Each structure stands twice: as C-alpha cells, then as structure tokens.
Length: 344
Image (cartoon, rainbow, N blue to C red; front, side, top):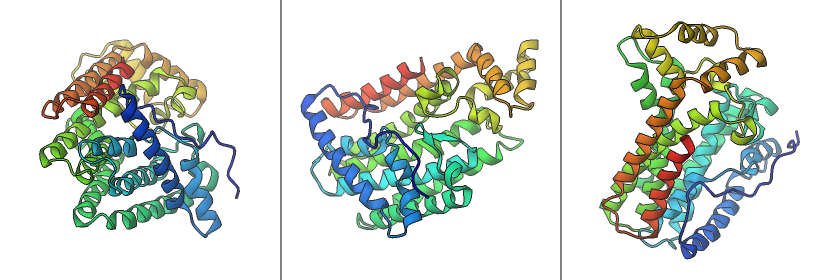
C-alpha cells in the first residue's frame, strides 16, 4: 500500500526557544543530520515495513526529544558523534511508542496525518512499532552498556505508564496522583532520558547530567498537562489530533479526573454531575463529543489543569539552578516558560 498524502517531511523544531543565534545555527544544522539519520534508520528492504515505518517520520513533528539531546550536549562538547546516535535513539523510541499509543487510543490522526492503524490496521501498526523499538535498541547498543541499561529502564517505564493508564487506579489509589505517575512514566521518562543522554555523551560533569535529567522529569509532566489543556481548548487543526479523542475512549485526562474528584468529595454541582453523566454516556457521535468538549472548555477544571501545568513548568525551571549561566540554561528555562504560556 502506498503512503497517503501527508504534510511536508521537514521537521518543525520550534518547541525550545533559542535566543542565541550561534547556538540556534549549530543545533539546526545538527538536526538536519538527525533527520537524515532517522530516514536511514527506519528504511527497510521490505516494502510494507518501509512504507509504514516512514509514515510518521514523513509527517514531521517538533522532534523535541532529539533536539533536547543535542541542546544538553552543548553543556559539554556538542560536536561528539555519539550525540547524533543518541538523538536518533530517543526519537525512534518516541515514534515507536506513538504507533502503539494510537492503537490503544484508537486515534484517527497523528501529526495531522492519518494514524498508522487507521491506514494499515492495528496488527501492522503494533508490529512496526516493535520494529522501530528494535531499531532503537540496535542503535543504542553502539553507545555502551550504560546507555543500553538506561534505554531499557526507560522502555520499561513507557510500558508501565501505558499499562497503568489502561487499567486505571486501584481502589486504594488517588486517581489524580495515579494519573500524574502515568504522565511521569509515559512522557517524562523519555524526555528525562533525552536530556540525560545529551549531557552524558557531550561529556558534561555528572552533576549537570543529573540536573538535566531531573528537569526532564518535571518538564515532561508539564508538557503533558499542557497537552491535556490543548486537547480541549484548541482545534484539531492546531493540535493535529481530534479534540476529545481521549474522552471518547474513556481515558480520563486531568480535567475529567478533577471533575470526578469533586463528585467523590461530595462537592459537585448539579451541572458537574450532569457533565459527568454525559462523559460516561455514548460519545460515539461527533455531536455528543463536541458537546462535552465545549462544556469542559468552559469549566473551572480546565483552569485548575492550567495551574497545575504552570506549577510543574516552574518546578522544572527551578531544577536548572545548579547549571552555569549561558545559552543552554536560558533555552531550557525558556522552554519551561513556553509550556506555562502554552497552557495559559
């Protein structure tokens, strides 16, 4: 099967603001090398595997994780060749997880293009996701045993995050805290590893490696909470995803969990309870989904989610205090600030 029409394959690397022109020029040049290496890494002699593997690469994206690796590599020697391999590893891992996530979520779109499972089916999407994980594993093997161990630990957290999102909290677990841990595992773990890899393979001091890893954990949660806001507050054209997809699949994002928390504490209004009943009802029609999305957009729980995203973004920025002043630290601080603005 041939690829359906897609957006330009050129990545849009705008997620991390850069005020230093020299740093921006260096990183953009290296990102071009990452893009070429990604295309090579997903290539396959098997035509079907090649088409499906290239699907999300061709759809572009911000390439946040490899960009973060190259940026933190500048805390040491940003020209080291290992950084290119590390950047490719984290993006391959991310892409593979998207193939699986879209099957789990039944998402029809990804990055503005048809999701893989909607074109080729669930089985092909899962198998090609596995193939990309294998490619990432083969590439990380060249970076040494510490990198292999870290990649394996990150992969485990990605799987646990998806598992716990699927099964939901246990009877003795707080649903909001459970969800924050899901975000830490599903999103923050790979951002933390991306930042850690950069500092590691750039040869930065160990203290800097630990600092950026801690930053990645906090900024990853902020990133996903901001996405929870955007999933409701933005259009599908802006986000590249159908608004409310998680609602339709019964996946409780933070605004919904905060609404359910009100009901559990006995402080929900009649309007709150009516909205919960609608959320628990039939959302298969576009009209029903649009109705609950609109009601959540106007609800206080969306503001509370914004506030939580801003808190995590500020905590992420605070983690950077031990780093030396300079353009790398400024860029990381600006990214945290941009996430806070994105959620606002």
